[in-house]
Image (cartoon, rainbow, N blue to C red; front, top):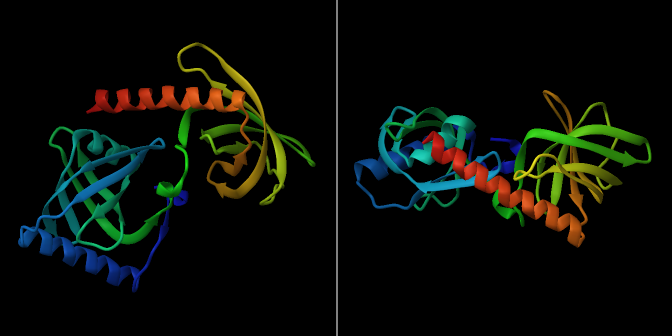
Length: 238
């Protein structure tokens, strides 16, 4: 799970918290307790959440019955959030195994977290493939690729160091695809740098963008079309 989706919420230590979570699931299973439990995944940015049923706690590994579409998301994302009424806060776990056909999943490495993605005002979806972008600031233009976009912001991987800092104001030139037709729509938007970080494939800049009716319409159309495509993809794989 990408770090910007959550923040760790350690109660004691990671080891003690993990042991507490494991003990809680043992209580649930052995006591046949009725609890509300949901898994939450962000499948290419789209939230996928279905109820799941704890079946067995084998050592530090939790076995669950899961929805087939959740199993697809688990398989592809490699981790999942757990929201369970037995605990007073959500958790994050690594996916040890996910079987779409058997509708089963195995989770391990539990820790308490705060899910930052739930605090977003608008849905942020990934682009596949990333689209062309250019950042125009005081230091000159920097080319990049749009990784994800929402009505509130955009993430761009740059082709070289941008030398941008938080709160810098820049202009962005973006190509937003039209998923119903070939090609896309070019946009120019005013934006403010929210964060700049390094990833394996290069620098990634995140921006808050200013909306006008045209920009909002183009991005809204893409978000709707992208959601439809992702839901179809999940159904086909499950």
